[in-house]
Amino acid sequence: MRATKIVATLGPASSSAEVLKKLMEAGVDVVRLNFSHGTAADHQARAQLVREVSKAAGREVAIMADLQGPKIRVGKFENNKIILKAGEKFTLDANCTLGDQTKVGLDYKNLPNDVRVGDKLLLNDGLLVIRVEGVEGSCIHTIVELGGELSNNKGINRAGGGLTAPALTDKDKEDLKTAVALGADYIAISFPKNAEDMKIARGLADVASKEFGHKTKLIAKIERAEAVMPGVLEEILEVSDGIMVARGDLAVEVGNATVPALQKRMIRLAREANKVVITATQMMESMIQNPVPTRAEVSDVANAVLDGTDAVMLSAETASGQYPIETVLQMAAICLEAEKTEVHHLDADFFDQKFTRIDQSIAFGALFTAYHLGVKAIAALTDSGSTALWMSRHKIQVPIFAMTTKLTSQRAMALYRNVHPLHLDTSNDRDTALEQAEARIKKLGVVTSGDAIVLTVGEPMGQVGGTNTLKIVNVK
Image (cartoon, rainbow, N blue to C red; front, top):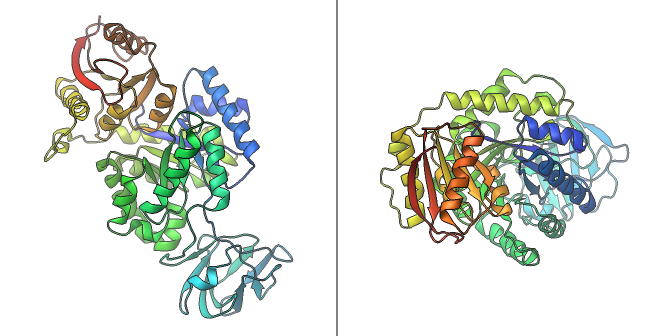
């Protein structure tokens, strides 16, 4: 069973019920709604379709709403695009309404206050580079160092980061309310600089969710240079439910060569902090137009799996690509092959560990027991999903079946590595629940009569954080 989860972005190529059903069958665990495009009505319709198709398919697929964030862009050109040549002078003018060969407007009017002479600005994901020669009022005067085509609304980054745009724009605040209303299981916050940005997002999400009775989980997209400074990332993790290794804008700010090591560090820190982590951006980029990935893309996905990422994400590949289903199938196959080669040192994970909670101790005890007894499966009866999350932070080839009566918990756990969430009918009677859990695993064909499984449960049942019992049983 595949441990690594797959996140797929919905778009024009994947928003029909037929394609969505095939994507789920191919292995999609989480769908991403990209709030950089479309209206609130568009996102609501897609979310409703996901729930309907998921229900028909007999499995719960999580929804992640990805907010646009303060994407700083150039304005529009009179002829839609220009060609910049190295050595030419070019002006970014916050008051310009329609650009030409010499200047263009800005959607972020404060940019002239954020830059200094000598700063390098990277346009269109770093494909073009201009150097600041002077700032005068609303104008940033630059010289082109690396030229090329520049078209309407392309993004701007400053090498090394440091732009002061807030993580949550007015649009994001409205989109966050929409995401909560449509029942998103996760909301991804773009461009947070520090923990305070995530705390603001959490406050807004908590207020919005009061009406709907469930707490949406927040993912911090790590794509600013400030966010990967020593100590800052740890603080962001502490106040978030997880992070996304958003390699696109991050690479523009810190440099392409820096990203691979940062990716490994982010995945490691997230797992140590008992938080989920998604690796994203250009993972299978060539499959937007080609039916097979490049060898480099195969290695990229496999390395993220070997690093321990919870999920790998597809963007344009499934949103607008020509081969969305084939892309998911290829990614799933790569994940499975990579997982087969993993070396597990579970005992080493427990060195210097101190357990302060009973439920956390039970979770680790279940892993230790399953590892050394060679059991076929772990069944965690859980209310909030915390027990399953703790178990999923450690690599083990024993599948973890998280069973819950709560639909919101079941969907949230769809993102956890090596966790297979299932619905449980009862939360009151322990013996009945354990019998149901055993029967469900047997029905899936994971175990047969005589196989050993490890069960964890809380007594009395139905209490958050109440896991206090570990049981080893032989399947009847």
